[in-house]
Image (cartoon, rainbow, N blue to C red; front, top):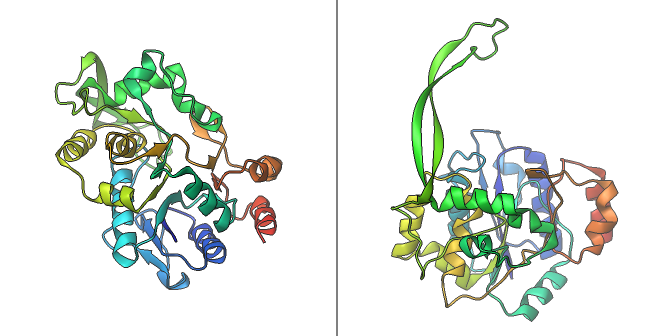
Length: 307
């Protein structure tokens, strides 16, 4: 049985459509949704009864620790109401592109506990870059490997500065001072880093699939994992390293370096998929695709394919 954890912060209609499609394909599975109500209002009564919203939700932001926290709260919500064999982490802009039977067959055949884009940062910088999925090669590009070392491993110095900007919604050029900050990366590893030879830093794409053993590990962190949490609270893009690091450093868990997600990177972000990508999406043999505009016609085409 599958369960789903969904992170959302906008487009309630798109989220509802995703939940209804998961219900159709997976026979009303348990769904836990962490919705950031500070960014978009949402009427929970419109959703099917198998969709459970996280009550103690947190305000989320791009690249912030709050995304890790939201995921963990969603995962805890899911396993408090059910006990699925596998959980799948999705965003509200994702969509299924395979039947439940295909997904189950792929996961069972592999025998792994987690299916997650993951590679060790330091070893990859030394030239030992695992190939991974070509769709996720973005994370393994040399430039991004340098960024990941700076984000997660190097020492950082945070400096307070005074910024100037005009008031919001002002049509004048009037400017006023405000307290801001900038981060300087230093050319040596952070002395407070939790990483060593037995606990290495991993990174990769945020979205992944895991089984019950993985969920239990994430919901019951050991001392090193807790130290990583404290360390990553002040680091950017920790959502693209925390789960990889916790899972890949646990010898009792096996993982495959794949996430079964279809996406196309362009620059620093994935593009919005559309009709022009339909054949590639369906022919990919993957499980989910991201990301889509609400009510894009390609979603109807995918629905027809999955009947």
